[in-house]
Length: 498
Image (cartoon, rainbow, N blue to C red; front, side, top):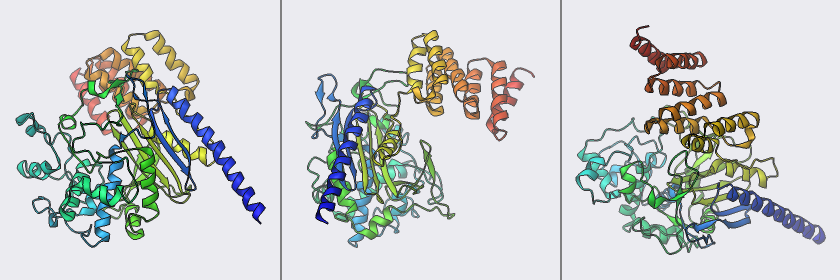
């Protein structure tokens, strides 16, 4: 019996070593392709099989990432905010089914509950342009959580939809939840997490910064591509944000935590081993949300159907186990904490180099550690193609598309990426570039009515109305329900007197 046990143990160790080697090769390849620059922590059956770092914490100084390198974890923070709220419920300090107004009396929407904040069904306005007038009035002001409710009141901001009727991802939901944590606990959000999550989980390298712009000594620099057609990373300090509020805010609760991959692994283990939250509360957090009409929240990311609980997303397909997760994305940073509850497997990724294909990478890792076929994500076709177009290297650009059409596995290509690239060139008033992008997109995605709709719009904006009619007709042919296409067709035909 003892010999059999030791044989099983040795077999397990040998298998995990092979997985570790294959995983290391996987991330080394991604790093060489400039698709990953960061820290990794992966576990199988609760045991860490890979904990490693790839690339540089500071590209300019060539300082390598280490286990102590700290990253902003962006929206993975939402799982902490949810956990904190549910801890307070577990202790009888609040009830998530109660109105937000009970705890924040000035909150102007009486029917919204705490639960609707945590499951993104509140209907409150998005942050993106909400504070523009205040920022223009007070250019030096930094917008924080405390400014949200006064702004709603001042501008009599309407709800985007009746609470509970729709799901819409919204950062301000979790900022308001953080205010409730502070009101109920009597201490700051940062101190609450330190005392009730970081310390119990032994997360010694995690904190909530008072000012997100001031970095810790171990915190990595962040790098991004300044344009969708850029192939060279630049420090985010040199990049202007799309929305004013990003540069002029210091929100917390929705994001903000700074941590390491190993600390996030400690958090995952403590949470799912019932060390920082009760089973009942955790189960509530991981239950898919139902709307007022009884329908379960559902949306798609990278071809995977998802649902959302309380601060946690989850795959609706549970054939490989119940998988819960949250990703995060800010300029120059991508993160994910993914946990397969059924198989006790986790994938934690923190990358400081632009737009990491976090879902394809995570899904490939899951396949790898479960001994299933996987594909290493390839470089982004639209970015490389866009760079050639921007540099007016038309011959090489066309050659690249032809090569891809012959061998689609050579690059990653998506309608969304090509559409966004085409529209970026349109906004920059580079019509020739935009039309070249959409034309190539129509070759790659010949059955996509949406690609032809976008191509038609670009032709119309660029004054090529006759050609726009033909392309819009193709879009409507592919999708007879394309009402916008039909309306624009009639408009263009009227403009040219047809």
